[in-house]
Length: 119
Image 1 (cartoon, helix red, strand yellow):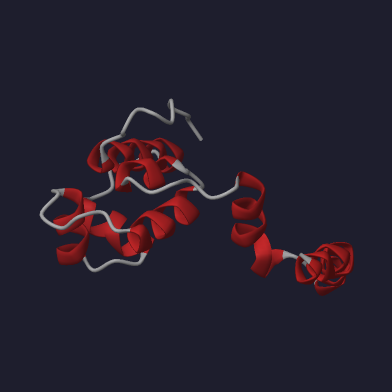
Image 2 (cartoon, helix red, strand yellow):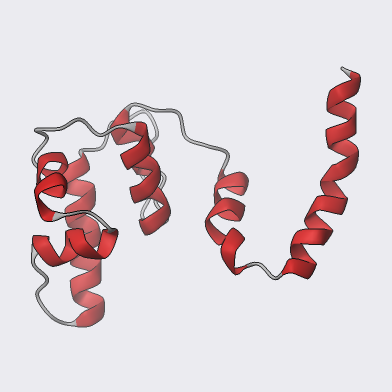
């Protein structure tokens, strides 16, 4: 997705509008805010409070939006530190990763976990 300088604090409403426009382009039709909210998993009232800044963008909301849109700028908008991009990518894809690959990942990181206990 589009990137911005990390020291600039993006506006959550503008980020959401950006993603709404991308979705509308992809589907070649107008999408209401109510439908958009439903797709993200919010009821429209709760979403509107966040969208119109009547409710602060919490870390929980930032994580949810960031994962849904694959856009770490939502952490910036919430004033929260961004997670490691590699970890974020693995977490976002974890449900889609085959069990055989998950086992390989566990095997690869096992030595590092035991090293942690040695510190």
